[in-house]
Every structure is written in structure tokens, then in C-alpha cells.
Image (cartoon, rainbow, N blue to C red; front, side, top):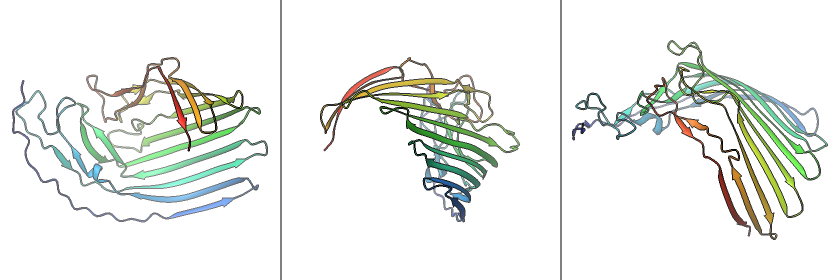
Amino acid sequence: MRLPDGTVPAVSNSYDLSYSGWSPRLALTWKPREEQTVWIAVSRSFEPPTHDDLLATSGGTPFSGPGRPAAPVPTSTAAAFSTAALKAQEADTLEIGWRGRAQSGLEWDVTAYHSRVKNEILSLRDATASPRGSVNADRTIHNGIEAGIAGYLSDRVSARLSWTYQDFRFDNDPVRGNNRLGGAPRHVLNASVAWEANDKLTVFGSAKWVPEKTPVDNMNTLFADPYFVADHRAEYNLSETAVLQAGVTNLFDETYASSTLVVDTARQDQAAFIPGEGRAFYIGAALQF
């Protein structure tokens, strides 16, 4: 059915909101050795909403513009924009970390954190996957670890490994309980290796692994599958200023969702997964001046 013309009502999009807050931070550092640092910090963050959060498109479907009525009631009217009186997002965070470098050249950096967030600003979509603007969650908890290690395995081989752990949850939400926040993978591992075959040729290999399912919606009814993606490339120095580059991404042609649209409650007939790129080859050159 053709949608009727002139059904989008004109509404005022003006708003006048003020935000103020404190962001104190206390940190202690200790150097057990000259090339190592251990630290602990307690902080409070204050983040007011942006204009993108406050002024959002509304109505319509993924196949029609904002403000257009949606089936099965094509004669209904809907405003094209909505302005939400959002509260500022605040968080109390405890962090502890250790970074350093050994005499062998091995480098590491590890940080763990626990954050209690109040009024977290969430950008959500409705049942048709159309934006419904931003809303404030009541209370959420963010726990995480960011760890990385890098060094030389031999005179010509170097490697780097990083691990990100993030457990983001609602805190006794009346609707969502202690569900995980949609869109945040719990584990992400990245690894890379570089081999200097000679003074001119260097070969690189890298991989990204998400070993667990990732919730798409905050009700945790739909999940993105785990995936493993490997890339390979090489660089050849023609001179001090010219470099030839060639490579292949997604070496094993993995079919996977690189990210998802975060929704509150997923439906079977809505768009949710953003596909990752398939196997691709490239070649190029870089000049330095």
C-alpha cells in the first residue's frame, strides 16, 4: 500500500538542557624496577549526552525514511525526530595495571578495571531495526582486562599478542535483569608475527579470534557466532623511499558477522548482522618523502 503524503507532523525539535559534574581522580604509581611501572587508580567520570544522543530520528522502517508511518497502519502519523531529556552518564572506576620491558626486549602491558555506571547512555533500535534514539539505563557494571605482550622470537622474527576481556552487564535491571549488554564480545584475541626474510623483504601474518558468541540484543535472545579471521601480507623495499606491498585478507574466506546492530529485543524478521568482508587480494606501493 502506498504511504499517504503529508502525514509527518511538524514538531519543535528545540531543547535546553544543562549538565554539570565532577571528575576527580586519584592514582598511585610504583616502579619496582627502572623499566617497570605498577599503578592503581580510582576515578569518577562524567559524560553528558551529545547532540546525536539528544536529537534522534524516529519512526519509519529500514525501507522508508524517518517519520513515515509503518504497516500495518499506513494512515498513522509519526514525528520525524524526537528529543529525549537524557541524564548524564556517570561511573566510578577502579583500575590497576602493570607495564614494563625486560632486558631480553620483551614488553608487556596489563590493565584490569571494574566500573559501576549510572545512567549509561544506550543507543537502541526498535523491533523494525529503525533507530529509536538514546535512552538511559539504570545501573550497569563494566568489568574488563586489556593485556598485551610483544617481543622478538629470534633475530628476524617478532610477535605480538593481545587479549581483551569485557563483561558488560545490567545491574538488577527490572526488565533485563543481569543480562549482558548487546554488541560487546566477551573475549577478543589478536596475534601478529613479522619475519624479516632479508634486508628487503618482510612477511607478516595476523589473526583475530572471537571465541564466544556475542549477544545482539540486551534481552540476550540472539547471538552472533564466534569467528576466526587470518590475514597475510608482505612488503618489499625497492629503495629507502619506495615499498611494494601485497597481501590477502580473510585468508580462509570465513563467513562471519564483523559487528551487529544493537537492539533491545531481537526479532527473526529484522536486520541485525553486518557481514565481514570475504577473501580479498590487494597490491600497492608506498612512497616516503
